[in-house]
Image (cartoon, rainbow, N blue to C red; front, side, top):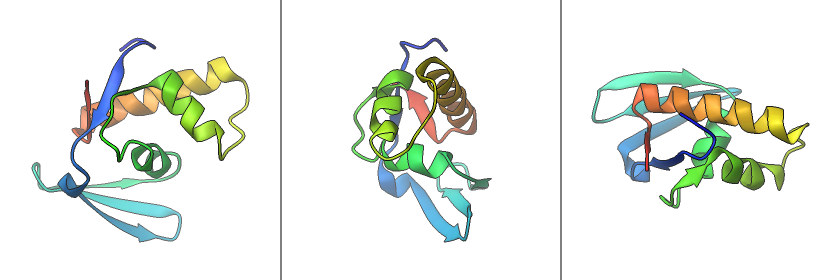
Length: 95
């Protein structure tokens, strides 16, 4: 997907979350699959909890309020890659 693509998280109750130190388990009710993720995936999903569509650039802006993400272009590309991976897992969908 490109940098202008918007993504949306399903309802927050579509995934059960269990935090184990630095590891987070995400149980996706619809697929019956459990995914193990680490930062920044939980932070990305948390900032999508409102259900509003968000682009990689907008997600960067949300995350940059709390984290030093380094150079903007590189960070936006990395966030976009994470969002695409979440789409592949079925945890996020294009809006």
